[in-house]
Length: 305
Image (cartoon, rainbow, N blue to C red; front, top):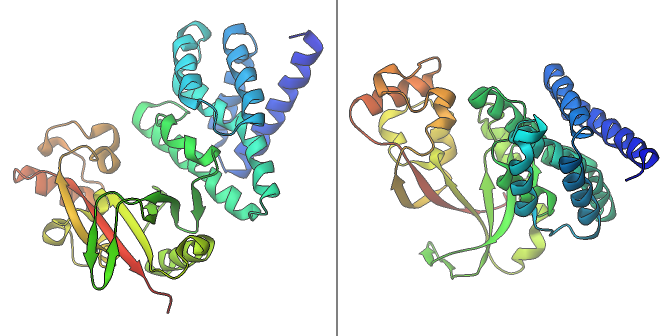
C-alpha cells in the first residue's frame, strides 16, 4: 500500500473510531486506548494487511470467514504489541462503517443500528472488568451483528433461529427447523418489566413476517432461567419476574456462567466470592450450601394484548 493510500485509510479509520466510540458511549479512557492501539496497527504491516484485506472483503461479502480473520489477528498480536482482545474490537469497529450502510440500504432504523452496535460497548466493559483490557473477549459472539442477523430491539437482543428438538404445550407444537425468536439479555442494567415487555413487542413487529398464521415464539437459553432461582433468590427479584413468562422445558447444572455474576472472582471458593450485590449474596449462599448453578431453556408464547 502506497504512503498516500495508507494515510487516507488511517484517517478514515481514526475518524470512524472517534465517531463510533462517541456514539456508543465508550469511556474516554477506552476511546483513547483504542486510538493509541490503532496507531500501533499502522506501524505493524502484518496486522495492517489483515485488517485492510478484511475490510475490503466485508464490503463485498458480509458472510466472510470472520473466524479466520480473528485467528490471524490472534497469531500476530504478540508481534504487534496490541492485545488480541483489542485487535478484535478494532476489527469490528472498522467493519461498522459498512454495517451502518447496510442498515440504511435495508431501511432499518438508525436507532436499531445504534442499539445493536452498543453490544460492543457492553462487551468492552465486561472485558475490562474480567481482564483489565479494553477490547472484546467474545469475538465469535459479535459475528452475527455484522452479518446483520442479530438485532437489539429495546432492552433485549434477538435473532431468528431454527428450533432444535420438539415441543408441545398449550396447543402450540414446535418441530425441528421451525423458526423461533432467540432472546439474549445484555448486561446493561436492571430488568424492568415495562422495558422488556416493550422490547418483546418491538421484536414481534420486527420479525412478524416470519410468523404468518402461526404463534410467535420466543426462545431463551440463559442462566437467568435457572429453575432453582425460585428457591434461593429473594421473592422481589427482577429475575423471577423475567422467568414467569417462560415455560422452562429443560435445565442444565454447571457453573459455567458464574463469571456473569462474579466476573474476575468467579473461580474463587464459594466462601471467598464477593457479596456486593443481592444477587451475588444469594448465589454465594447457594454455592456455599454445596449446590451447583445452572441454566434453563425456556419457551415464551407471545400474545399481543
